[in-house]
Length: 169
Image 1 (spheres, rainbow, N blue to C red):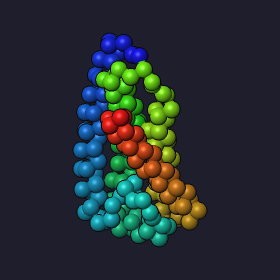
Image 2: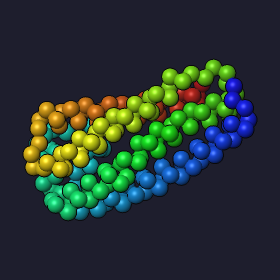
Image 3: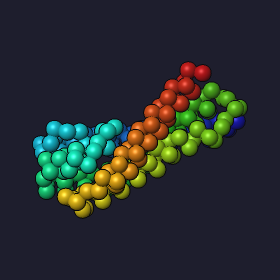
């Protein structure tokens, strides 16, 4: 069982992470609004399914200026956000553990958001590669990035579901 002092530290970090995640999400919304001027499609990160053709179409719709904004969004925001949301989930789990004074803590669930972060980074690296080499796209590479996108969303969902489980039980 964690000591009360450690729990206060966990609560403090949780609060800081909550604020940082909110700030990043607001910045994401600003960038997504900028991208909507170029294309009505959602950004690739938010799609659970895309193809080589749809990626090419999206990048063509964005044009040079839109692709610059998208690249800036990935490099400036989406390289920070996975760490922040993963730590946020981890600190949520720890805060609930402290609040419940539960002696049955397992380290295994902490790996769920870490895996989401890992797959998010792989997805981001593929998107940056696509942007760098546009208009040349490989069907195989797009399919591989789609796998990482789906795995990211699966592990984000699992992180949320585990959080709900902890709150209920």
